[in-house]
Length: 364
Image 1 (tube, rainbow, N blue to C red):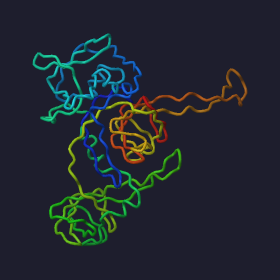
Image 2 (cartoon, helix red, strand yellow; image 1 turned 180 degrees about the horizontal axis):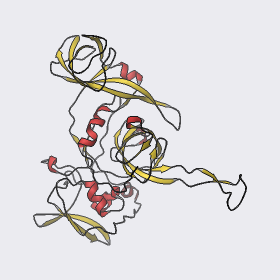
Image 3 (tube, rainbow, N blue to C red; image 1 turned 135 degrees about the vertical axis):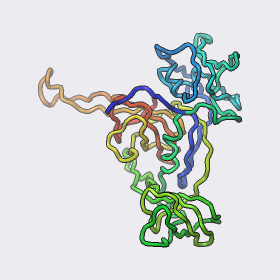
Image 4 (cartoon, rainbow, N blue to C red; image 1 turned 90 degrees about the horizontal axis):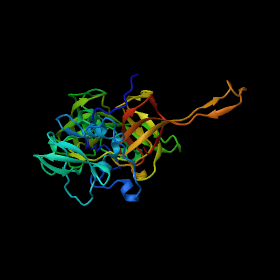
Protein backbone atom coordinates (compact mmCIF):
# COMPACT_ATOMS: atom_id res chain seq x y z
CA UNK A 1 0.00 0.00 0.00
CA UNK A 2 1.41 3.36 -0.98
CA UNK A 3 1.42 5.94 1.79
CA UNK A 4 1.64 9.69 1.54
CA UNK A 5 3.14 12.19 3.93
CA UNK A 6 1.50 15.37 2.60
CA UNK A 7 -2.13 16.42 2.69
CA UNK A 8 -3.15 17.44 -0.82
CA UNK A 9 -6.58 18.67 0.16
CA UNK A 10 -8.71 19.87 3.04
CA UNK A 11 -11.22 22.48 4.21
CA UNK A 12 -12.05 24.48 7.31
CA UNK A 13 -15.77 24.43 6.55
CA UNK A 14 -17.38 21.13 7.51
CA UNK A 15 -20.87 19.86 6.95
CA UNK A 16 -21.86 18.90 10.47
CA UNK A 17 -23.84 15.70 10.75
CA UNK A 18 -26.94 15.40 12.91
CA UNK A 19 -27.33 11.63 13.07
CA UNK A 20 -26.68 11.48 16.80
CA UNK A 21 -29.32 10.12 19.09
CA UNK A 22 -29.11 11.69 22.53
CA UNK A 23 -25.72 13.14 21.62
CA UNK A 24 -24.86 16.54 20.22
CA UNK A 25 -22.36 17.70 17.66
CA UNK A 26 -20.51 20.78 18.86
CA UNK A 27 -18.75 23.07 16.43
CA UNK A 28 -15.57 24.58 17.68
CA UNK A 29 -15.59 28.33 17.90
CA UNK A 30 -13.42 29.77 15.13
CA UNK A 31 -12.39 32.54 17.50
CA UNK A 32 -10.98 30.35 20.27
CA UNK A 33 -7.38 30.99 21.13
CA UNK A 34 -4.90 28.16 20.96
CA UNK A 35 -3.96 26.02 23.95
CA UNK A 36 -0.53 27.61 23.91
CA UNK A 37 -1.99 31.09 24.13
CA UNK A 38 -4.26 30.04 26.99
CA UNK A 39 -1.44 28.52 29.02
CA UNK A 40 1.21 31.03 28.09
CA UNK A 41 3.41 28.20 26.82
CA UNK A 42 5.52 29.03 23.78
CA UNK A 43 5.08 26.66 20.85
CA UNK A 44 7.82 26.29 18.29
CA UNK A 45 6.46 27.02 14.85
CA UNK A 46 8.73 25.55 12.19
CA UNK A 47 8.44 26.77 8.62
CA UNK A 48 8.90 24.33 5.79
CA UNK A 49 12.38 24.55 4.30
CA UNK A 50 10.88 25.19 0.85
CA UNK A 51 8.09 27.52 1.97
CA UNK A 52 7.14 30.32 -0.45
CA UNK A 53 7.50 33.98 0.48
CA UNK A 54 4.10 34.64 -1.07
CA UNK A 55 1.31 32.61 -2.62
CA UNK A 56 -1.76 33.53 -4.67
CA UNK A 57 -4.83 31.51 -3.69
CA UNK A 58 -6.59 29.75 -6.56
CA UNK A 59 -9.94 27.98 -6.80
CA UNK A 60 -9.60 24.45 -5.49
CA UNK A 61 -7.03 25.36 -2.84
CA UNK A 62 -7.76 24.46 0.75
CA UNK A 63 -6.62 26.06 3.97
CA UNK A 64 -4.84 22.91 5.10
CA UNK A 65 -3.13 22.78 1.73
CA UNK A 66 -1.84 26.28 2.26
CA UNK A 67 -0.91 25.64 5.89
CA UNK A 68 1.11 22.58 4.86
CA UNK A 69 2.81 24.72 2.22
CA UNK A 70 4.11 27.16 4.83
CA UNK A 71 4.36 25.04 7.99
CA UNK A 72 5.90 21.73 8.97
CA UNK A 73 2.92 21.17 11.30
CA UNK A 74 -0.21 22.53 9.56
CA UNK A 75 -2.37 22.36 12.70
CA UNK A 76 -0.25 25.16 14.19
CA UNK A 77 -1.64 27.64 11.67
CA UNK A 78 -3.39 29.72 14.39
CA UNK A 79 0.09 30.51 15.77
CA UNK A 80 1.23 32.02 12.48
CA UNK A 81 -2.14 33.49 11.49
CA UNK A 82 -2.62 35.12 14.87
CA UNK A 83 -6.16 34.16 15.86
CA UNK A 84 -7.73 37.12 17.65
CA UNK A 85 -10.60 36.26 20.04
CA UNK A 86 -11.71 39.92 20.02
CA UNK A 87 -12.70 39.78 16.35
CA UNK A 88 -16.36 38.89 15.83
CA UNK A 89 -16.22 38.52 12.05
CA UNK A 90 -12.68 37.74 10.87
CA UNK A 91 -12.06 37.00 7.21
CA UNK A 92 -11.79 33.73 5.43
CA UNK A 93 -9.39 33.22 2.52
CA UNK A 94 -10.68 33.60 -1.01
CA UNK A 95 -9.33 32.76 -4.46
CA UNK A 96 -7.25 35.70 -5.70
CA UNK A 97 -5.94 36.60 -2.24
CA UNK A 98 -2.16 36.95 -2.07
CA UNK A 99 -0.72 35.47 1.12
CA UNK A 100 2.60 37.04 2.14
CA UNK A 101 4.98 35.72 4.78
CA UNK A 102 6.33 38.51 6.99
CA UNK A 103 8.28 38.68 10.25
CA UNK A 104 6.94 40.59 13.26
CA UNK A 105 9.10 40.81 16.39
CA UNK A 106 11.16 37.93 15.10
CA UNK A 107 8.13 35.67 14.53
CA UNK A 108 6.59 34.62 11.19
CA UNK A 109 3.10 35.82 10.34
CA UNK A 110 0.91 35.70 7.26
CA UNK A 111 -0.85 38.74 5.84
CA UNK A 112 -3.31 38.70 2.99
CA UNK A 113 -3.22 41.29 0.24
CA UNK A 114 -6.46 42.24 -1.45
CA UNK A 115 -6.57 44.93 -4.11
CA UNK A 116 -3.03 45.96 -3.23
CA UNK A 117 -3.74 46.36 0.48
CA UNK A 118 -2.19 44.24 3.20
CA UNK A 119 -4.22 42.99 6.12
CA UNK A 120 -3.61 40.32 8.72
CA UNK A 121 -5.46 37.08 8.02
CA UNK A 122 -7.83 36.14 10.81
CA UNK A 123 -9.56 32.79 10.28
CA UNK A 124 -13.24 32.46 11.02
CA UNK A 125 -16.59 33.17 9.43
CA UNK A 126 -17.46 35.79 6.85
CA UNK A 127 -21.14 36.73 6.94
CA UNK A 128 -21.46 37.30 3.21
CA UNK A 129 -20.39 35.07 0.35
CA UNK A 130 -18.91 32.35 2.54
CA UNK A 131 -19.51 29.79 -0.21
CA UNK A 132 -16.69 31.41 -2.19
CA UNK A 133 -14.14 30.92 0.57
CA UNK A 134 -11.74 28.00 0.45
CA UNK A 135 -12.53 25.15 2.81
CA UNK A 136 -10.81 22.21 4.62
CA UNK A 137 -11.97 18.78 3.42
CA UNK A 138 -14.15 18.65 0.29
CA UNK A 139 -17.77 17.99 1.23
CA UNK A 140 -18.10 15.28 -1.42
CA UNK A 141 -15.49 13.21 0.42
CA UNK A 142 -17.06 13.31 3.86
CA UNK A 143 -20.59 14.72 3.97
CA UNK A 144 -22.40 11.52 2.96
CA UNK A 145 -20.58 9.48 5.58
CA UNK A 146 -20.94 12.05 8.35
CA UNK A 147 -24.64 12.54 7.72
CA UNK A 148 -25.23 8.79 8.07
CA UNK A 149 -22.75 7.64 10.69
CA UNK A 150 -23.33 7.72 14.41
CA UNK A 151 -23.25 5.87 17.71
CA UNK A 152 -26.34 5.67 19.92
CA UNK A 153 -27.54 3.92 23.04
CA UNK A 154 -30.11 1.13 22.78
CA UNK A 155 -32.50 3.24 24.87
CA UNK A 156 -32.25 6.21 22.52
CA UNK A 157 -32.78 4.01 19.48
CA UNK A 158 -35.92 2.52 21.03
CA UNK A 159 -37.43 5.99 21.47
CA UNK A 160 -37.39 6.66 17.72
CA UNK A 161 -40.36 6.21 15.34
CA UNK A 162 -40.30 2.90 13.48
CA UNK A 163 -41.52 1.07 10.40
CA UNK A 164 -44.57 -0.83 11.62
CA UNK A 165 -45.54 -2.54 8.38
CA UNK A 166 -44.59 -2.88 4.72
CA UNK A 167 -47.17 -2.45 2.04
CA UNK A 168 -45.87 -5.38 0.00
CA UNK A 169 -43.76 -8.33 1.05
CA UNK A 170 -41.38 -8.90 3.94
CA UNK A 171 -38.69 -6.44 2.86
CA UNK A 172 -38.75 -3.11 1.02
CA UNK A 173 -36.40 -1.12 -1.18
CA UNK A 174 -36.33 2.09 -3.18
CA UNK A 175 -39.75 2.81 -4.68
CA UNK A 176 -41.66 0.74 -2.10
CA UNK A 177 -44.09 2.12 0.47
CA UNK A 178 -43.90 1.46 4.21
CA UNK A 179 -46.02 2.48 7.19
CA UNK A 180 -44.41 4.38 10.06
CA UNK A 181 -45.68 4.84 13.62
CA UNK A 182 -44.50 7.22 16.32
CA UNK A 183 -43.83 10.26 14.12
CA UNK A 184 -44.51 13.63 15.73
CA UNK A 185 -46.69 15.77 13.45
CA UNK A 186 -45.50 14.29 10.13
CA UNK A 187 -46.12 16.45 7.06
CA UNK A 188 -46.47 15.26 3.49
CA UNK A 189 -43.16 15.84 1.74
CA UNK A 190 -41.02 15.55 4.89
CA UNK A 191 -37.90 13.45 4.32
CA UNK A 192 -36.70 10.94 6.90
CA UNK A 193 -33.66 8.72 7.31
CA UNK A 194 -34.19 5.01 7.91
CA UNK A 195 -31.65 3.44 10.27
CA UNK A 196 -30.98 0.23 12.20
CA UNK A 197 -29.08 -0.62 15.35
CA UNK A 198 -25.68 -2.11 14.51
CA UNK A 199 -22.81 -3.70 16.39
CA UNK A 200 -21.74 -2.80 19.91
CA UNK A 201 -19.00 -0.18 20.26
CA UNK A 202 -16.66 -1.23 23.05
CA UNK A 203 -13.93 0.93 24.56
CA UNK A 204 -10.76 -1.18 24.16
CA UNK A 205 -9.21 0.43 27.26
CA UNK A 206 -12.06 -0.12 29.73
CA UNK A 207 -14.31 -2.68 27.97
CA UNK A 208 -17.19 -0.26 28.61
CA UNK A 209 -20.10 -0.24 26.16
CA UNK A 210 -20.05 3.13 24.37
CA UNK A 211 -23.20 2.46 22.37
CA UNK A 212 -24.18 0.87 19.09
CA UNK A 213 -23.13 1.91 15.61
CA UNK A 214 -25.98 3.17 13.48
CA UNK A 215 -26.56 1.38 10.18
CA UNK A 216 -27.91 3.59 7.40
CA UNK A 217 -30.71 1.86 5.48
CA UNK A 218 -31.95 4.67 3.24
CA UNK A 219 -34.29 7.64 3.10
CA UNK A 220 -37.98 8.13 2.47
CA UNK A 221 -40.60 10.83 1.92
CA UNK A 222 -43.91 11.05 3.78
CA UNK A 223 -46.73 10.36 1.30
CA UNK A 224 -49.64 10.60 3.74
CA UNK A 225 -49.73 11.69 7.37
CA UNK A 226 -51.65 10.58 10.41
CA UNK A 227 -51.01 8.39 13.43
CA UNK A 228 -49.75 5.77 11.00
CA UNK A 229 -47.98 7.61 8.18
CA UNK A 230 -47.21 6.20 4.76
CA UNK A 231 -43.67 6.77 3.54
CA UNK A 232 -42.19 6.17 0.07
CA UNK A 233 -38.61 4.93 0.18
CA UNK A 234 -36.43 7.12 -2.03
CA UNK A 235 -33.15 5.24 -1.89
CA UNK A 236 -31.82 2.27 0.03
CA UNK A 237 -28.40 0.78 0.66
CA UNK A 238 -29.97 -2.45 1.96
CA UNK A 239 -33.48 -3.86 2.47
CA UNK A 240 -35.75 -2.04 4.90
CA UNK A 241 -37.61 -4.20 7.43
CA UNK A 242 -40.31 -3.89 10.04
CA UNK A 243 -38.78 -2.45 13.19
CA UNK A 244 -36.25 -0.24 11.43
CA UNK A 245 -36.08 3.20 13.01
CA UNK A 246 -36.80 6.57 11.40
CA UNK A 247 -35.21 9.99 11.92
CA UNK A 248 -36.07 13.37 10.44
CA UNK A 249 -33.44 14.66 8.02
CA UNK A 250 -32.54 18.24 8.83
CA UNK A 251 -30.61 20.62 6.62
CA UNK A 252 -27.57 21.86 8.52
CA UNK A 253 -25.38 24.64 7.11
CA UNK A 254 -21.64 24.05 6.99
CA UNK A 255 -19.93 24.80 10.29
CA UNK A 256 -16.54 26.46 10.25
CA UNK A 257 -13.77 25.03 12.38
CA UNK A 258 -10.00 24.87 12.34
CA UNK A 259 -7.48 22.06 12.92
CA UNK A 260 -5.58 22.41 16.19
CA UNK A 261 -4.22 20.39 19.07
CA UNK A 262 -6.69 19.62 21.90
CA UNK A 263 -6.61 22.10 24.79
CA UNK A 264 -5.79 19.30 27.25
CA UNK A 265 -3.56 16.24 27.06
CA UNK A 266 -5.49 13.46 25.32
CA UNK A 267 -4.74 9.78 24.99
CA UNK A 268 -6.98 7.25 23.29
CA UNK A 269 -7.27 4.49 20.71
CA UNK A 270 -8.78 3.75 17.32
CA UNK A 271 -11.88 1.56 17.82
CA UNK A 272 -12.93 0.72 14.28
CA UNK A 273 -12.66 1.81 10.67
CA UNK A 274 -15.27 2.48 8.02
CA UNK A 275 -15.99 -0.60 5.85
CA UNK A 276 -14.29 -2.87 8.39
CA UNK A 277 -10.89 -3.09 6.69
CA UNK A 278 -8.01 -4.26 8.85
CA UNK A 279 -5.40 -1.80 7.58
CA UNK A 280 -6.07 1.89 7.54
CA UNK A 281 -4.57 4.46 5.17
CA UNK A 282 -4.77 8.15 4.39
CA UNK A 283 -8.25 9.72 4.11
CA UNK A 284 -10.07 6.81 5.73
CA UNK A 285 -12.66 7.47 8.43
CA UNK A 286 -12.12 5.87 11.83
CA UNK A 287 -13.99 5.74 15.13
CA UNK A 288 -11.99 6.66 18.25
CA UNK A 289 -12.75 6.19 21.96
CA UNK A 290 -12.66 9.88 22.84
CA UNK A 291 -15.68 12.19 22.54
CA UNK A 292 -17.40 15.26 23.93
CA UNK A 293 -17.01 14.15 27.53
CA UNK A 294 -13.25 14.02 26.93
CA UNK A 295 -13.18 17.53 25.44
CA UNK A 296 -13.09 16.51 21.77
CA UNK A 297 -14.21 19.14 19.26
CA UNK A 298 -14.36 19.23 15.46
CA UNK A 299 -10.88 20.07 14.18
CA UNK A 300 -8.90 18.55 17.02
CA UNK A 301 -5.77 16.88 15.68
CA UNK A 302 -4.25 13.77 17.26
CA UNK A 303 -1.13 11.84 16.37
CA UNK A 304 -1.37 8.09 15.77
CA UNK A 305 1.17 5.78 17.43
CA UNK A 306 2.04 2.13 16.92
CA UNK A 307 2.87 0.30 20.14
CA UNK A 308 6.41 -0.86 20.60
CA UNK A 309 6.74 -4.64 20.64
CA UNK A 310 8.85 -6.87 22.83
CA UNK A 311 11.89 -8.37 21.10
CA UNK A 312 14.87 -10.54 22.05
CA UNK A 313 18.38 -9.08 22.08
CA UNK A 314 20.01 -12.41 21.19
CA UNK A 315 22.49 -11.53 18.48
CA UNK A 316 24.88 -9.52 20.62
CA UNK A 317 24.05 -10.20 24.25
CA UNK A 318 23.11 -13.81 23.61
CA UNK A 319 20.38 -15.83 25.23
CA UNK A 320 16.69 -15.99 24.38
CA UNK A 321 15.51 -14.36 27.60
CA UNK A 322 17.19 -10.98 27.14
CA UNK A 323 14.02 -9.14 26.11
CA UNK A 324 13.35 -5.44 25.75
CA UNK A 325 10.59 -3.18 24.42
CA UNK A 326 10.92 -1.19 21.22
CA UNK A 327 9.69 2.39 21.55
CA UNK A 328 6.27 3.44 20.27
CA UNK A 329 6.43 4.80 16.71
CA UNK A 330 4.45 7.78 15.40
CA UNK A 331 2.73 6.59 12.22
CA UNK A 332 0.16 9.22 11.30
CA UNK A 333 -2.18 12.11 12.07
CA UNK A 334 -5.97 12.23 12.27
CA UNK A 335 -8.50 15.03 12.67
CA UNK A 336 -11.74 14.80 14.63
CA UNK A 337 -14.75 15.59 12.47
CA UNK A 338 -17.79 14.37 14.38
CA UNK A 339 -17.54 14.14 18.17
CA UNK A 340 -20.26 12.26 20.05
CA UNK A 341 -20.70 11.78 23.79
CA UNK A 342 -18.11 9.04 24.32
CA UNK A 343 -16.57 8.56 20.87
CA UNK A 344 -15.78 10.49 17.69
CA UNK A 345 -15.42 9.95 13.98
CA UNK A 346 -12.09 11.20 12.66
CA UNK A 347 -10.33 11.34 9.30
CA UNK A 348 -6.79 10.03 8.84
CA UNK A 349 -4.95 12.99 7.34
CA UNK A 350 -1.44 11.59 7.21
CA UNK A 351 -0.18 7.99 7.19
CA UNK A 352 3.52 7.12 7.38
CA UNK A 353 2.84 3.37 7.50
CA UNK A 354 -0.14 1.06 7.89
CA UNK A 355 -2.51 2.10 10.66
CA UNK A 356 -4.60 -0.48 12.50
CA UNK A 357 -7.51 -0.69 14.95
CA UNK A 358 -6.24 -0.31 18.56
CA UNK A 359 -3.36 2.00 17.55
CA UNK A 360 -2.76 4.71 20.16
CA UNK A 361 -3.71 8.39 19.98
CA UNK A 362 -1.95 11.34 21.62
CA UNK A 363 -1.65 15.09 21.27
CA UNK A 364 0.48 15.95 18.24
